Image 1 (cartoon, rainbow, N blue to C red):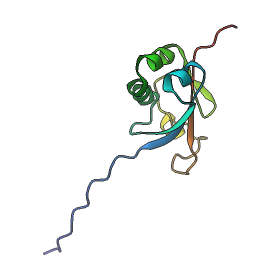
Image 2 (tube, rainbow, N blue to C red):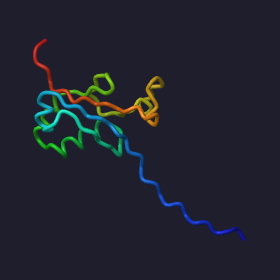
Image 3 (cartoon, rainbow, N blue to C red):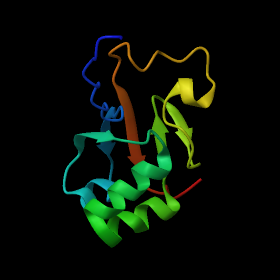
Image 4 (cartoon, helix red, strand yellow):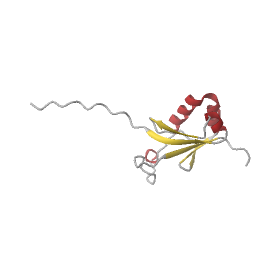
Length: 111
């Protein structure tokens, strides 16, 4: 008879840590210019939901017409935040300790 082993407790789902920077109307809505967040699902959709839940209608208004800058790349989609999840072979490994930075940009006027 095989020895009995203790069951391994389930591990918590991995969370993605990121620095979120806010500019202009986004900073006004958040009441800050920068903060650290952790998301259970590393997507822009999850970030949008988190920011709207935290900061309500003022942030929702910014997010409707604004954009994100994810590690220097303009994004308006709802897809993955990390390069590995986007299929970007050149992106830094999310476990390497390199922080992910997301800028929340309001709509820009002019041309």
